[in-house]
Image 1 (cartoon, rainbow, N blue to C red):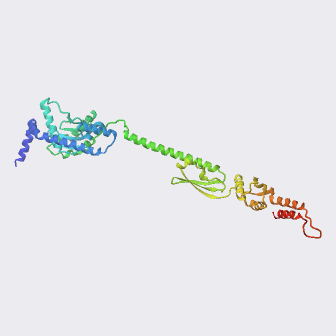
Image 2 (cartoon, rainbow, N blue to C red; image 1 turned 120 degrees about the vertical axis):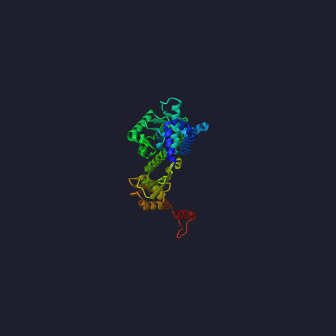
Length: 419
């Protein structure tokens, strides 16, 4: 029953003597307001500290040391060095009643009771007017070393913005223009305001648009750790690049040696799982392809050859192949002229027969000639026949018996024939 009377009396008392009411409630509101602001600030600091807790740059270590040395939160030090300004909260407050018409906050800011903040601002403004000049309005309130409250007052309402850092002057102009727009659109509602703030929610998006921030633009410097990492990566890339280039050079040089080698024909090459593969044809008389790789090169690249046997018609290989197949005695010399295998020297009848039968079958041999070969067996036979023809044997008269001393000559003749 008496509540309407008390409400009306309280409103009348506030309207007639606001200073007395402010003085009366300030001791109660002050600690609560300070606690609310402190909780808001610490909530944001704690949230940011969690985000930056795992930073491990050289600059971050310096800032952590500074935070340890000064006893401040690490996130505060980060903001101090990186943030130009940030609008954390904006209050739209009715001048006469001190009621919060609307309140918006930025992300990572803990929301407290806006009415406590409004009461604090009203009490502080009344204190300034009573203590100094009643014609002057409080425009800026400093909280700590890096947070302030900007107050832009209109005819019926004011905007109070909690700002961290050093905001530009044009930000105050934007607040003033927004406040003027609110008075133009809702001036009558502000003048006849009786406690219902729901109609002022239409300005919430415009208030949120002013929740901005600006970070300090500094020249990005690479941390020593990042520089070391980059140098390590570049070093590894350089080593890998050098190894790749050197391997490529060794591979090309090996291919050149293979192509220059007689009796080797390269059909295809490929690289599979880090191993160079060579496919081709190899004459039995050609050099071993593996022997063409230098010992120090085997540590850098891996090469595997796949060689199919074949007979090359290269003249430089036909003659060695002929020697390998015919196995001539030291007294025989073999030569090749326009595909004709020439033999010269002395040889046995058996080897001459082998030469005559085998030479035409040797790959690359078009014909053969043994005119320069002397038959050593025939020569011995002719000498023996000549020696026999010159021997004379004498017999006893009317007998088959040799004359004395002729038996030795006969035995010598027999030995010659047998040999």
